[in-house]
Image (cartoon, rainbow, N blue to C red; front, side, top):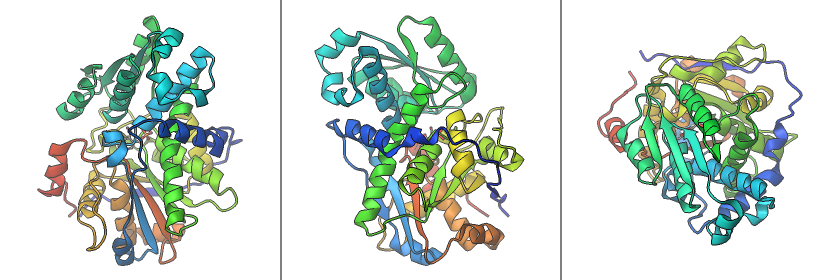
Length: 404
Ligand SMILES: Cc1ncc(COP(=O)(O)O)c(C=O)c1O
């Protein structure tokens, strides 16, 4: 039998919730307007899996398909690009609303701002986004990847003209390396997708950038006459993405928020462990963090994100790798009539988890605690496509990480 999904409902004491305004509707609208200024911008599809919902006993199931984002196969560029724009706006004394794509790619930018080197650590997707944005802005990017990073992900970043290395370090130690090097470099800036004490501004801008995805999804649901999702499932590495989605929907529906379920890879389940300890303090997971969900292989929570999740999340799930693999196969071959979604390892864990909750008697208690059933309108985020095409085929075509 497969190792089970472990879960805990949120019984943590609440904080003052001082970080929720990071994801105010205004901040997210600004991010969305910024992304809208890119010639590559298009709203990514929201796959309406009506047949799958029916089959699983849900009212509706909707999957935001980020494999279409800017040709980069993942949502991450939304964060890095907006943070770089806000950083440049601050350095040049401009309003961020004026730092459009046209301005950022103009000769005027070089006169106003000059050249900086943007450092970051990444499992792949964030670094690719930073490298992509830096190249378009005529800036330099240096990217460090953790031990075990795959060649395709390395090549995709190198292709964008960034200086890339794969280190003998885990993700969290790569972050420390990037921060140190940025500190030692003239005009060096670290654009990291996680916050820690004393490093909060840039990660909060990154979270706002992710907000574009949430705002698009909310609008697409309304177009489908779903005014409010009843449940939002979102996966987490450091928790920037999850807290951004949770923060946006908590601000959008302040009196009646959806239920929020946070999913992590078993090997890097720091948020789950914090929720299990239930004292409100975050927990850290160390070691090699080996999981097929490379984007979720982060053992140290974003401090701002943790605070938002602590106050607003309903449940935390620690998911073995088979959950993601199952989700990938289900999204690749859904019920006849439903659109297929090419969803990578870190993108598909929500599908696998929802299927397990609805179909496996082991999770009946959690399903009931969350009130999941025929009246539920469930929103998932497929945050990446086949960013590692070899592994994608191993899983989807050849059945690797099959559930038993
Ligand atoms: C595809 C994908 N999904 C989800 C995440 C998780 O985001 P976060 O680290 O903000 O929790 C990542 C992070 O790199 C990712 O690449």
